[in-house]
Each structure stands twice: as structure tokens, then as C-alpha cells.
Image (cartoon, one colour):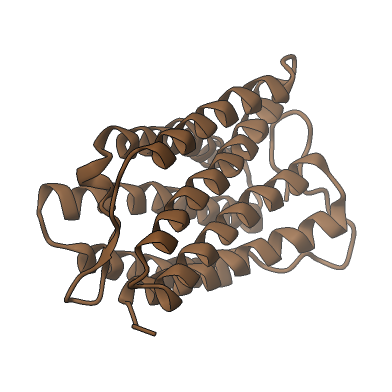
Length: 247
């Protein structure tokens, strides 16, 4: 078994996002609301994405076929995550439109991306530095750009909603949670961008992305610890159907 820094980087990401997933599971179990449930689903799918990539990087770093399946499965899992985000956006901001319409549309786009990923030849390999070069930027530039586009059209509106919550709320606890989540979502976009920028534009190799993911994972974990507190024992409304997240 060959060690890779890519596996370690995504393992750190798994712990960070997994902890956030646990927090949202607590909120969902306490409040039983639609929004708390779909926030949990959204974060849980990206936790699964981190776990799949970490396992592939840690235990199958020199197995090209397994690494190909890691990329394909990651694209499929992310499709569910994007769909859950869009469901939340429509539920909170467009209550007159069924959230399933927007969610289904984005999910189909995600499936199309997964299909293109599966049929396009690419050869992931372990670089001498210890980072895994997924060979997506070179073999699948359009697919990679399209996946980043899905991140933008789903995460950016969510960030806007959270920033609005920070501005509108007078409760310091609510402000902290919304601000922390907005930063976590922003880091998700940054992570996707860095893969393209560092490896394709600057030609720094896979190790540069691994370092970026590791640093961002540690920062995200610290943010979650300080901004996403466990739910209070007394009754507190987590969200309202009017689009304001009450926590």
C-alpha cells in the first residue's frame, strides 16, 4: 500500500465536514424541520464525497482503475449534494415554486456530468511528490469546468442567503452560525477553484492542491467548532418557511 498526501488531505476534509454533518443531524433531530433535514442531507453527501476520495487516496493510490471510479463516484455523490442545495434555495426564497423542480433540474445536470466523466478517457496516477494527479484538468477540461459551474450556481445563492441572515439578525448566536456556514460554503468554492488554478494555470502539481485542501480543512474545522454550537436544550426554532433561518 502506497501512501498519498491526497488521501490525507481529504481525510482531514472528511473529519471537518463530518463534524458539521453531525451538528446538522443534531439540529434535525431536535427541530424536525424541512430545512434542517435538507441541510443535513446536503452536508452528509459532501462528507461521503470526502470519505470516498480519502479511501481511494489512502489505500489505492497506485490503482488507476480504482482512482477512476473514485472520480466517477465523487461526481455522482456531488450531484445529490447540489440537488439538496437547490432544494433549500427554492424552499427558502421561492416558496410558490415546488423545490423539486429546481432540485431535479440540477440533479440531471449532475448526472450528465457524471456520465461525461465516465465515458471520457483519463488516467489518474500518483506523482513522485506523493500527490494524486487525477488527470481531469488535462483529459476532461470541459467536464471539470462544468463541475465547477455547478458549484457556483448552487453554493453562491446559498452564501447570499446566509449573508442576508447575518445582516438581518440581531441575535449574536444566529449571526455566528450563519457567518460560519457562509465561510464554509465559500471555502467549498475556493477548493474547487484551487484545483484548477494551481494545477492547470500555475502548473504546480497535485501536491499544491493537497496542501490547499489540508489548510482549508483545518480552518473549516475551527470555524465549525466556534460557530456551530450544539442545539440548546430549550425549545428554539431552527428555520421558518418564510426564508429566514432562525437557528
